[in-house]
Length: 231
Image (cartoon, rainbow, N blue to C red):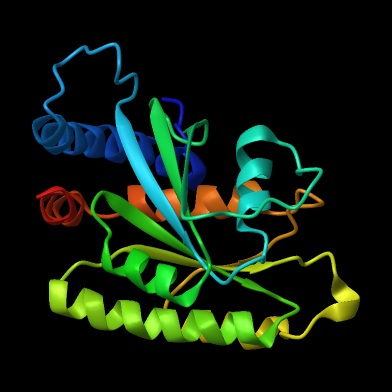
């Protein structure tokens, strides 16, 4: 009889991801609809999975520009400046089911960042951003990370994190060496990506990476997380 080659690792990964995504959709909708009193088949909720992400980072490092590039595929003509909290909604084409991505962009002042880190209801992932041309913005991230770890330990909630070095196109002004940031992230088990919103470099990769980190959680951990974050 003819020999059948085993499926490639890529195909297996795709199938596993499909099953995992569908299962997480079932888990998510169970808690989300109960918490928000949403009826099945509601036209107002046209998604099977809602994954909320939140930015954390200093002022004027390009968080709004990166969001604009991801959602609108357009770098803003003028430099946007966040006041308070901005909320953006889009849909992800990287997953196998209708998935809504909600992005929370918080003002970069220290007090705003700390309040934001303490309130994470419904948030699945945090995008820690710093300016590759600013030592201070990187030090801010380190402080905020330590603050978050203390909070997570007390609340027993573990968010998915990613570290992003912004403005990689400004190589002449670079203040943070890539191995410095990558080593810091690696020691903490956090993915690290350098981006340029202006050149559209790696912007989509950032969101796909953290969404994939969430989807590849075990179903048990995902359900436990939904219980803690929605109730």
